[in-house]
Length: 193
Image (tube, rainbow, N blue to C red; front, side, top):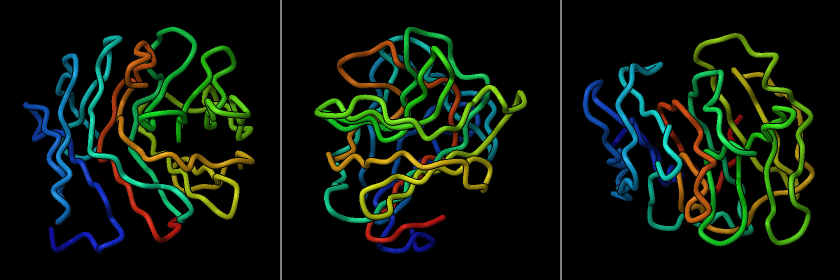
């Protein structure tokens, strides 16, 4: 826990390689609980988790993203899980997907349930090779800048200010499972790139 500064609100290594774990590695002890049955998989760094079924997700105590800078990141395996219309990795409890992929065109962006709907970053996920990649979203004023594998790939001209609650899927709406993920990190009060 001494590795993560106070701006980190949640760091989830997800597994020891054989058993899924949703223990928060920061001093916040914001441990998650699983719904469905996310399974342990070989990850990018030790083990990861596969959110493959329609109800697979992890719920954490609400982490505020309102009116502060934040950065959300995870390693993920491409191609993503094939499901209905979306793949969600970070979602609020009420309205807003902090990082989402639209299945019809495989565009990366965010989704504002309350106003503007899908806000495209312009990045097309199908340009990625098969294998592990890193995605990060960081806010800057009223926008969300997207990074893949450490490179800036586009901006969604909006931001989600609703508290983050769900990892790996939409939450109650289900069937937006992400697929394989590893090393989920949430930080606030600072915009990391």
